[in-house]
Amino acid sequence: MPRKVIITCAVTGSIHTPSMSPHLPITAAEITAAAIGAAEAGAAIVHLHARHPDDGRPTQDPALFREFCPQIKAASDVVINLTTGGAPTMLVEERLQPALQLKPEVASLNMGSMNFGLYEMIGRFKEFKHDWEKPYLAGSEDRVFKNTFRDIAYILESCSDNQTRFEIECYDIGHLYTAAHFLDRGLVKPPLLIQSVFGLRGAIGAHFEDVVHMRRTADRLFGNDYLWSVLGAGRSQIPTATMSAAMGGMVRVGLEDSLWDGPGKLAETNAAQVRRIRTVIEALSLEVATPAEAREMLKLKGRDNVAF
Image (cartoon, rainbow, N blue to C red; front, side):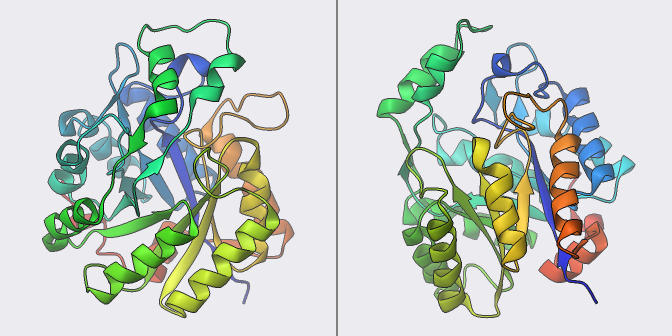
């Protein structure tokens, strides 16, 4: 039987500013439609951030998440994954609230503090739609995304009664060792969903040898107790996802991670990126996992056990 590959689609996020692409979903209605479209294209999991609808600023206000999570759940069987990353400008208590209050099946969790450089994007655009955008990007040259060991433990312990499983985001090799540390402490339980992130300024590169090194290290640390997934930022999205699929892993695409659907062509929808990687997966004689199959592979608590 062909191996199943879980596709996660990161629908909208805090990496890109809204004026960089007219196709980035901002409002609750746009996020809902984008998530449902990605699911129909083959995504088993949708990873979601929220935005202020007036100017697109990142927000972790649970009330705004409640404007799209129930609608997506009503229209689709897709697994909903909420961020605890939010934006580097937010405190951990603020970033935690959507996962804590809405109790999703999956939530993302960065495995460490890191430089998160977005400032190079400034030179790619001549003008910005909103006043906050350019300073937000420029400030990333001297900004650290903070997730200390205490922060990570705080998030895991706060959500322990929710039975939420975490998309464990590892931006470098040391983050894998941090994940192993929390596995040893019993704060995360197998099967782990290890999401390896490549190609961001401040993270591991997107070279083939970087991808292989991340996979070998994860295999040594976690053995059969994990599922490995890969996301590549920007133009590395499809190449690194293809490497992962060929190496036995899962994949993540979406407009949070890349605005592009080929050289010089903006992706008009998240679904377009899902369809592109689905073509690759099926060309490798693999099959795209359904939401039900993803729930079984990850041992999730089920869609009826969330608070939305």
